[in-house]
Picture 1: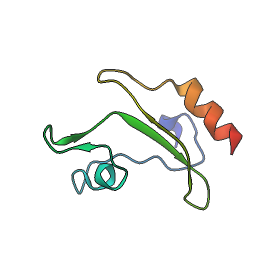
Picture 2: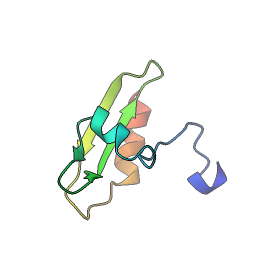
Picture 3: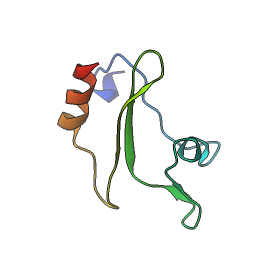
Picture 4: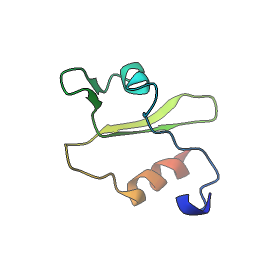
Length: 72
């Protein structure tokens, strides 16, 4: 956890099976073969409480995501 800044919750990356999560969340670009840069915050019941798709090359702001986490 230390390399993640001590976050007490899991993070997910859509690595394998390739694109499975992006397809489930509607952000997989079939033409490019990759997910759109996106962030989703889910509550303990698995309900999406925040979703944001970012422009290519944009990196989500940690502050923005932490604010969303504090809301839940």
